[in-house]
Length: 123
Image (cartoon, rainbow, N blue to C red; front, top):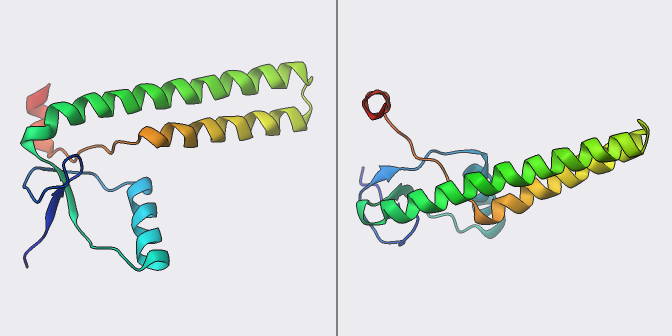
């Protein structure tokens, strides 16, 4: 069985480090398969040439995600305190946190699958 490997950064057909399938990629693939009927089924990888760009983009995504979710939690706490425990204030804070989480997905960069022997060697 011949698989079609595609780099997520340059889009070229190259071998590389495989991308971990997570809820975002599965959601995109579900949408392409069921709504647009256009899923190609590529195996997503990061080629060796683009690894430095990937590493910077992944670090930026993680920083943004942590920052946005932290900001949302702070908003939720402030709204809970100012609303004196009113459920509406807490609900609005949770909605703001979810919105900020989805906003962080605009710069989404998936994690890579690292074999167990490579993880131990990296430490």
